[in-house]
Amino acid sequence: MANPPKETHLSDNDAGAAFVLQSKGQWWHAGFHLTTAIVGPTILTLPYAFRGLGWWIGMLCLTVMGVVTFYSYCLMSKVLDHCENAGRRHIRFRELAADVLGSGWMFYFVIFIQTAINTGVGVGAILLAGECLQIVYSNIAPNGSLKLYHFIAMVTVVMIVLSQLPTFHSLRHINLCSLFLSLGYTFLVVGACIHAGTSKNAPPRDYSLEPKKSSRAFSAFTAISIIAAIFGNGILPEIQATLAPPATGKMIKGLTMCYAVILVTFYSAAVSGYWVFGNKSNSNILKSLLPDEGPSLAPTWVLGLAVIFVLLQLFAIGLVYSQVAYEIMEKKSADVKQGMFSKRNLLPRIILRTIYMIFCGFVAAMLPFFGDINGVVGAVGFIPLDFVLPMILYNKTHKPPKSSLTYLINMSIMVVFSGAGIMGAFSSIRKLVLDANQFKLFGSDVVD
Image (cartoon, rainbow, N blue to C red; front, side, top):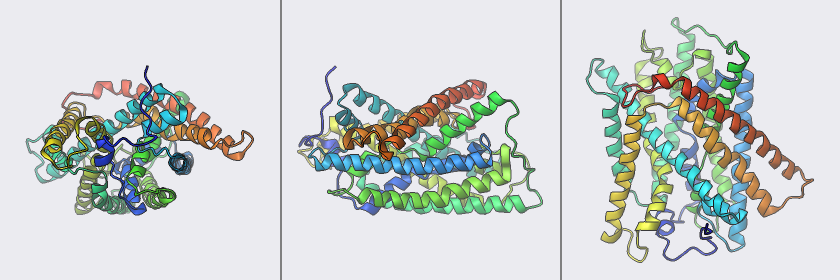
């Protein structure tokens, strides 16, 4: 098998690099991109993850995942800086891994995992945005005739239009809005949970775990996989590529901004949601606050505004995770010698991006299940990409002594999370199989 091309020098004919991954951004732009890539509506799944872990283990796992991912992303940024200083600038995860590890198969492994993650996130963003529209519609017209797939089609049309923004850098203002939207709906949901927990209609609270030890273990590993997926960011090299060179040090500032938002949003959403609903927490806490039977557990306008904020942010998330697909398309289809908006490049861009979004929308409408898939993606996608590979890449490039604390920490993280990933994949797939009887093609309800 032929080795993939290494980016020792970026090709003058690389339209994916020149157009989609333009290097014009500042560190705060990277912060906006990172926040959109990590802090999304999946944080509303945290109470659901806690019900498989309980209070103390849930808080411990959330904290450990946060510390490890911040450390992991800092290591990867240092690897990228090291390669750039050595004259080998990398702007794609797959080519970084292939170059550092000197392996042709690693190139294809990373591109497979990245494609699965990014397409999965794109499908999930469209699905959840469609569900948000359905929630609003069902409150306005309880007996309306529109189904979930109708709303998914509406969202897909909007995504097709937004997908024509030509570069990753051109999303910086959208992603700044995304940052504020994540803070906005988090505060609204936390306020709604406090209201629900202190009202006369407060649901009974039960924080007990499953009685059977085997079921409890499977639930715990599924929960760990979900938390890994929530913290996951499979496009960090591509985000760093958007920074104006030299990128050294800028990414760490962007990560610090992102994790400040994570600190505020993740803990408040997890604690407030699990406090109110305990082991009855839904995979989307908004659905717990808006039960199918009985009155809303919080003011309708608060929940409605939160749903709208979530809906708007999902557009940004879908756009961010589509950038890898777009740069692959334009690397093959565009002519860098002609202008970005020339007829030669504009028509293929419109056609290919439209086809990609239609595909994501079709899959979202056909397979409307989310909670179980989230665990599978975390276990088989984000864990190897975010918890294992960065440690290997750092040890390979910086070569810390085997007796050093850094080397021991890196090896420990690799071993622990490889094991967690294997168990998480098994338990998540098991739950997927157990819930298979609920799946219905083109169904009108999102299956948890």
